[in-house]
Length: 235
Ligand code: ADP
Image (cartoon, rainbow, N blue to C red):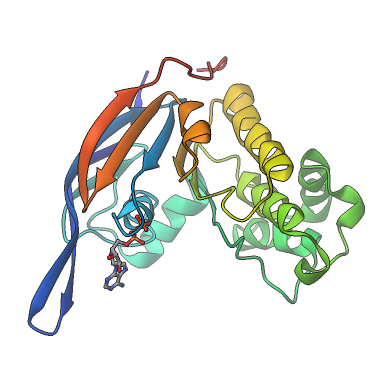
């Protein structure tokens, strides 16, 4: 097994006038490829900040992040974007689809940015995978929240990510729809061995992952291996 995400003494502070606000304080953990992992904790405890640093969306004030053995800390924004394009899928609570593009076009965007050719066929296959082939020409505002989240999943799957980060992936969805989205995320883990890192308020969802860290006030207050883990089959 190899380490897919190593976080060492990660600290993030913001400067507000002459005050320093430390929102993450000395966080460390190590994930192996194929692990499923949740970050839980109260609102404002630093979960989204931690996820963004791990995915290379932002830079830490101190400490290190190694993603697939690439150290992110000293990379430029462009270099971090390249690492993300190569290894990372990201889904957001509010979906972040482009409103002026259809479902199919939204899935095609990252593929085109990577310079891939003939992407519409693969994008349609991905939409089919999440049950939305028939909605390919719909714009986000013509789709329900659950459908938009599934489009964003198809988009996140488009680079066959080694690691999928999801920030409250079911936060805006009803129970039935959130079950569908969760099943798709775990299918990716079982079939492709994709590492899952979820930020969630939903403790039932967290319990489906192999490990849960709880953060409070920017620090890790517990780190638990769960009994009820969803086994991965393709490590
Ligand atoms: P959570 O995801 O657990 O709700 P966040 O990571 O979003 O928490 O935020 C943690 C803390 O960091 C909050 O107090 C928030 O106000 C603060 N914060 C987040 N981003 C910034 C920023 N760009 N500048 C200043 N403070 C920020």
